[in-house]
Each structure stands twice: as C-alpha cells, then as structure tokens.
Amino acid sequence: MKILRPLLLWPTTILLSLNTALAGEIFIKLESQNHPKQNFDSFFASILEGTRFNTKSNASEKKLNTSSAQPIIKQQEKKFMPEAVALMAGQEVDFQNKDDIFHNVFSLDPLAKFDLGLYKGQMKYSENGKYPLEGQFRTRVPFKKAGKIRVFCNIHKDMMATIYVYDHPFYAKANQDGIVRLPIPNTQGKMNVVIESDFLSQPYKYQITLPIQGNDLKRPLVINLLTETNFAPIEHTKKDGQTYKVKDQGTNQGEANDFY
Image 1 (cartoon, rainbow, N blue to C red):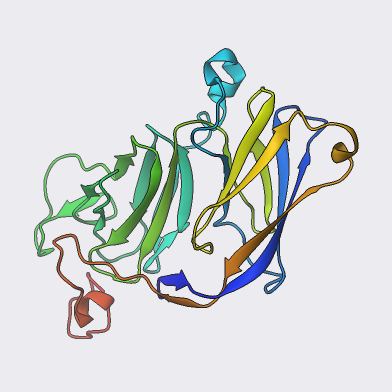
Image 2 (cartoon, one colour; image 1 turned 30 degrees about the horizontal axis):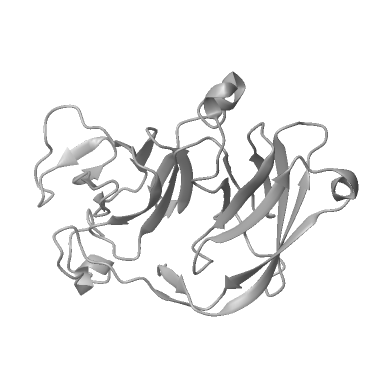
C-alpha cells in the first residue's frame, strides 16, 4: 500500500448540532459529495489550540479523553493499523508488531523523535537482525508535546502513521460514517473548532458561539470543506537520512523473509 498525499479538491459538508441531552458535547456529521461511502475514521475534530477555556475549573472535563484505553498502533500486513490516532500530551502509544517479520518504527519529528530499533513481537534484535538483544524492551512511546507527528518504518517505505497530540481533552475521532461527538468546555462566547485529516491539505477552522440558542438548536450548522481524492506518495527518508532502496520496499525476493 502506498502512502498518499492529497492533490485534488472536492467539497465536503460537515453538519454540527448541539446535543441537548448531554451538555458539553457537539455532534458533527461529515459528508463528502465525491465519495458518499468514504471511510472517515482518519478525520479528527478538536477545539483549536489557543481557544480560551479553563480545564481546571471542571473536574469532569479534566478526565475527558484521559481514562480511555491506551492508544495502540499495530504493525500488521506491512501496514500501521490504525493509520491515525489522537491523544493528549503525555500519553503513550503502543506500537505492537503483529507481523512475523521485522519492523523498525521511528520518527524524525522534532516534537517526538524516537527510534524503536529492529524488533519482532516483544523481542528486540541487533541492526542486522541476527542477534536478539537481552533486557526488557518497551514498544510504548510517550508523546509529550502537542502537534501532528509522522511515524514511519525504517524497513518498509510505504508504512506511515499520523499521531495527533493535543494539549487539552476537547477532541474526538470520527467513525467510519463520519460521526464525531466532540466534547466542549463549559464556557460561553466564541470558540474555534478545527477539522484535521491527511485528506485535507490543511486543517479547516470554523468558529462557533456558545451556548447555541433558539432556532440554531433545531437545525445543524453547516461547514463546507474541500477534501482531496487524488494522491501522490509522501516522500521521506530512512532514520539515518538515507533514501530507501528497492529492498527496503519489500520487493527483493533475495532478502531474508524475516525482513520482508
């Protein structure tokens, strides 16, 4: 599977409405005109960083998105699954290798530079893959700073994952049908909502005013996005800055099966 970058733009609609039964939450519905059955589970909604709210004022708000299960990204069938996750700054992602071959998960992003080295299952190996290394090996990586972080495999060029790290708990991931339940702070005034995905050339920002009142409670708010459907590979280097060779893409049948 190739890692792809969006090129063409198509209109998408996002419908927002306040959930009157559960305070502090907005429902978002993403719809795409060009792909009615498009899978939206790589789209994320959040309160834009810099929006003024005080998470310390409400104990329940502080628990949002922090008590859920630890994010896990599996390496399976030479893919990252899922290919995108969201978490709060300070949380960890567990990069589990479910393939019967080696992977080497890494990131060169200044926000979270790391290198897990060569491993299979819970066992870490020497760089040439010949010798298992003794000692405890952790596949969990902490992400301490907010931002968007790209993660790759040093062996398989086409593997890429995106980590969205937020410095507040007001974010949510869309499901396959494009439904998002976005928690919002208990506040009044203008608030910026941002939609992020690799299907967007840049984050889309939309301003709402809370509390939502009157007729606005009875009809959805509509946001028109431009999603992108034609893609080109995202170029990146290996962890040492070198370019991938043919063998690094798993096409060289002469290489050991443990790698490819």
